[in-house]
Image 1 (cartoon, one colour):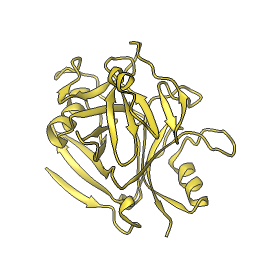
Image 2: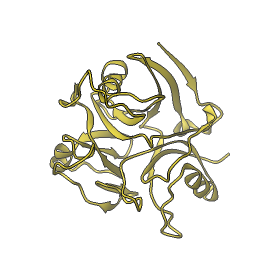
Image 3: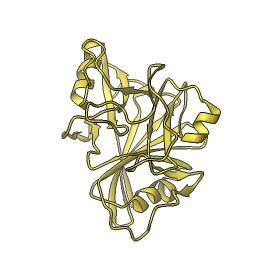
Image 4: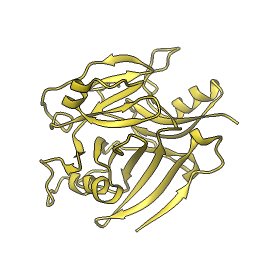
Length: 243
């Protein structure tokens, strides 16, 4: 079952974000769909004036308001160290701030294959990390995380249907043509299998990437939602002109 709640009252096509509640596998999710051909999608990490981590949706919104812009939607967008530095590759406004990590490692990030969310001109894509290194797509913004949830239409091979590991989780999926992006967050603790099949079976995303668990949060003012909690690292958002 699904029902859509359109984020209305926003300026111009670049602000269009469609958020909907989805029921899947006995669990509830919120999914925000973005048209990458028109939306102004950006990543945020540090305040340019102070060089301090922005760390919250409120700080991002204040920074944009000062520049005459408006934060329409946002979500935490990748794992980070205690000082808010990204764990993996990170590009903001064309500047690479952290390199790509291709090796396996501990934790969810190192559970290969992992991937990169790449925001380009008029499109955005989730790309498996080794493919990302090989193809070297042009990314205005990029954030690496892991594990991949869906790779070429298949679930990550290590996901177990009967897993007892449950967390509130969030992630991103992309369509094959890079035009449609799905940002999803669970409303209660779910398994990787449940979360991955949301992208594969319900949304039809051929590629999807896990952002994080437990600290997962969503900013959607039109839903009267502004999740708080621990300071964040990378944040992805949709921006519109203020007015």
